[in-house]
Image (cartoon, rainbow, N blue to C red; front, side, top):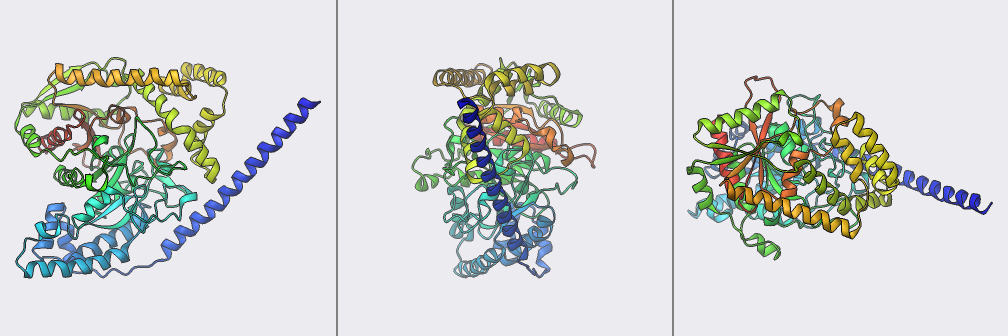
Length: 554
């Protein structure tokens, strides 16, 4: 009888906990709706001028800078044009999160006065005021911008206004750039489709039935549709590179250790980067390799160390970049990349076209095998699960955020489902589903200290193995495929919730990697592309190879 009483009490306790959770969820969703309603109630009347056409034609950072410094346009013209695009197209396609249009326009007026004074004194405006002076840009919702909401796309944080800029934002503002909008993101940055219960479901500007990608989907689409010159985002498993490719843009994941993580929000109670072996990294999304290069020179500035003493003093190496541009490259290609990705026709064509372009340019393709590639990725995911999933699970229930159904299932399986039951489900899945699904079942459980130490040692050995391959084969960079398909249709989003292994691979290896769009022979086709990676700390080599490939493809 006592056992039945205990079971009854346990059941009542769980039921009360569930009711409390659902009540929190309801209240949070109400809050999220109120935040969106408040934003949308702010009406703006941007007055079009003749200068807007000049702004529209200035499709690069350097072109905008030239137009501003030669006074072909005012900074107010530039900012009002992009605010208008974000306000109209951005809102219509659910690409924007928090907006700072009024504040950006006021700042533009002040900067116009400063520029006028600088020119009257005969000074060089770029040297005096900064290389991005007066140029607006969008910022991923996850990144701190003083006075703006950083919601992580979850209702419990819908009204969370931060009081300090992330270090990356400080560096760009130091060069005179103006934040005017936040980009919409995937819920808690956990999927590759941008959708949440605050800012809505983002739609691809090229085809509104398709995804923008994620988690930085709002920003990538804003840049793609001409509603922002560039964007600053984060990448933890493809979050910059996937949406960049889905929108035909360039997106760069730098060597993570080169940049501060200060001011990057995470969906845990600590609201900061907590993982030791993997961490999100700041990087840009832009229309050209030249823009990516310019932004990375600013983000790699030695001034970053003034804001964060933990940032290593590794300024951009212009000599290495220039040297790489001039030499004939040896480009590594992983023979067994199909162990972790199956490419559909358009993506495969982009991969093969890139190889052919390099060969025609006089560069050498070197094939090699990444031994135990699939096992390496699964091993790293197992470590990541142990570092992150318990904290995400705790935050979800503590704050009352009913996340994406697939994510909730994964969190429940990891934290609550008995290991033997997961093993049975994994075995059954292995009989009927791809081995990626079966493998995910097997790693959705906490590991003990000894197991974690063993997995960490294995990861380190494989990273060293890749570094040795670079040396042994005298490789300059790696060329790997982009996503397995172009931007998928939104109705298929549930079929794309598994981690994108060939993107996460480079976060796991800590290799700087850039997404490169590859032109298609079919003008109506959705964008596709490839990735170029270099050894850790050799970001300049990757960026030079991106420039070479871009020129060869064009």
